[in-house]
Image (cartoon, rainbow, N blue to C red):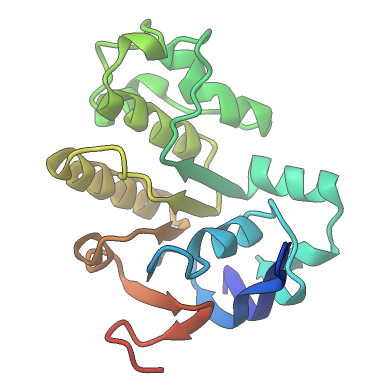
Length: 223
């Protein structure tokens, strides 16, 4: 089991008092499998993804990645986790504007102390073979997202987390991006957890987890 989430709770303090966001969420994800995380805005999807990424800590429950309990790690340990074990893809491309496509693609791999492999071959699969010397501002939105995907995959994480990765793209480009992500993740044997509002995109992954008011529910609405 690559990812194990058990009875996770998370809330935040507001002007009106404590506001629970996640209420006892549990699920598993195996290596080589993909899982869509769906739900309405405010259901806790992004909060859950951030907890799995070690960007925040749960109030209760346990999150294990490859047997390691994230809550037991300090900030440095969670940072190492994100460098080597967990890869993140967001709506915002977060590319480094002063680096070329080649250097952006290899950035995370080198940060993790790993050989990024054949960058030319990866760029070719990403449709970026003719853009390696360009900078992010010279690329379209779809091309920048391809760089962001490639940068994550080049580091060969064991778990890839994606938060609405196609949200800034048109439908056709978004479909192509999801197909590419699934292909690259499958090739590396990683697990893939993606937050999406789209039932259509969710249906293209192996399984689906639906959140409603911080609880896991049936996608059709029944607990």
